[in-house]
Amino acid sequence: MSELNIKDLHVNIGEKEILKGVTLSIQQGQVHAIMGPNGTGKSTLAYTLMGHPSYQVTGGSATFKGHDLFSLPTDERSRLGLFLAFQYPVAIPGVTVANFLRTAVNARRKAINPADKGIPILEFRNLLKEKMRMLKMDPSFAGRYLNDGFSGGEKKRAEVLQMAVLQPEIAILDETDSGLDIDALKIVSEGIHLLQEQNVGVLLITHYQRMLNYTKPDFVHVMMAGRIVESGGADLALHLEEHGYDWIREKIENGINGNK
Image (tube, rainbow, N blue to C red; front, side):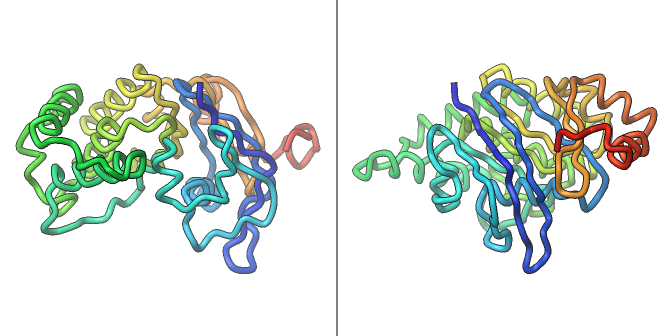
């Protein structure tokens, strides 16, 4: 069972400290949701774990499958089994969804075996059809240019399709619900649930309880001022929806939560 372990993580952007001691463990098959106000460090955590060069680790550690994550370049972290779904996926005109995914699959295969000549076209086509069927996606989607002219919902579904094809062990989803209407939200959430059933661990960064209505997290964490200040089950998200974050701020000010 693979596990991502983050311990006392401190991260700067330039001279400004953003993460101020984050500790979190995520196992395969679990869904962890991170909530919190804007500017608290949620996306910083996601990009740091995947190796964005603008984020400087100044303290703490992150290990995955026994490897020091911060000693590895981004592509090796991906091949190890980590995946990041972006809040704002980039369009790549001229590159179809199918070609992009086949290239990604072949890169992983070649990293494992340099003599590998790539996945046969028929095998890949069957794999892609199977995953698109699972996610209830129209087969014509595979022939479109990646994210080019896609709606917000289509971009997020393309990210879930990438996860389904690449089969990571831990997936980090940075505000995947951003910009989605209710119908798109349900479709994306169903896709995430299907991947969870295939033993993918999920770190879901979100602002909204509505995403958690469909995704059903095992754990909910609240991040404020660069720290995780409250953790609980799915009921914590319901409490936040009703009461906001002021009660947590009061606990911090009164020194009740000495956890983080």
